[in-house]
Amino acid sequence: MVVRAILFDGDDTLWETERLYDEARVRARRIVESAGLDGEAWESRERLLDVENVGRLGHAMDRFPTSCVQAYHEVCAAAGGAVDDGVQRAIEEAARQVFEQRAPLVKGAKATLLELRARGYALGLLTKGDPLVQARRIEQSGLGDLFQVIDIVEEKTPESIISVLDRLGTSRSEAITVGNSVRSDVLPSLAAGVTPVWIDAHVWEYERQHDQFPADRVIEGRRLEDLLEISLA
Image 1 (cartoon, rainbow, N blue to C red):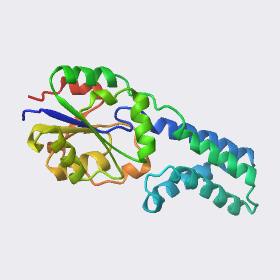
Image 2: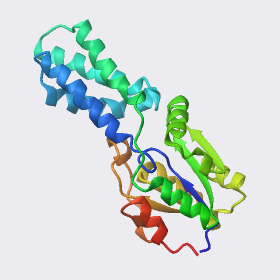
Image 3: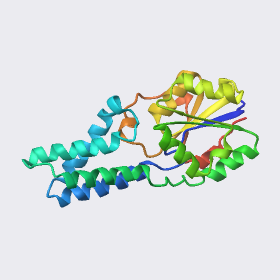
Image 4: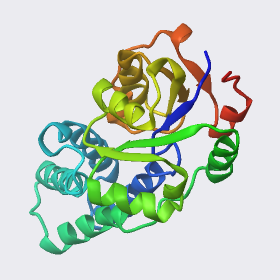
């Protein structure tokens, strides 16, 4: 396989977002516990609710804060207490900080992209999520100028992958994708007929709900910088 183009994922492939969610959960859990409630039960319910709410709210900014508040209501009911408006506001504000903070770059992200550009590869970015949040993260990352094509989608599909490759002027047989999620990166790429590189990084519960993949059709890496060691020609 001779590779001419590489299509990258954004969240937790080039910049770290799960760390922001984990930190927000810690802050919200402390608020819950300060109110005399079971923080462990709150977090367990919030994580389940956040996955369930994808069906109703998708990847909109409201989903995560809504899940945090819903879990607070549930632990209040379980404890036989009333919802405190001040506590609810504090939990929601703690959750919304995820979208106000800068997502740190994955180690070696910029250097890896610069080296791949220097080697002559066409680079594309296909990232999913709330359009405003993703556009801000791309801008804050400082990586936007390294891509010939950037697309933000609600969900990745074989069609969205092929669309970006078409705009890069590359066939599926001459491209690879790079991402950390089997559900959102590996499986759509395989369905599109594109070889995926899977970086086994931190993902949230929703992304862990996936089928197994055929290992002989997927290139596995432990970190983004491994791309520079993979034979692509």
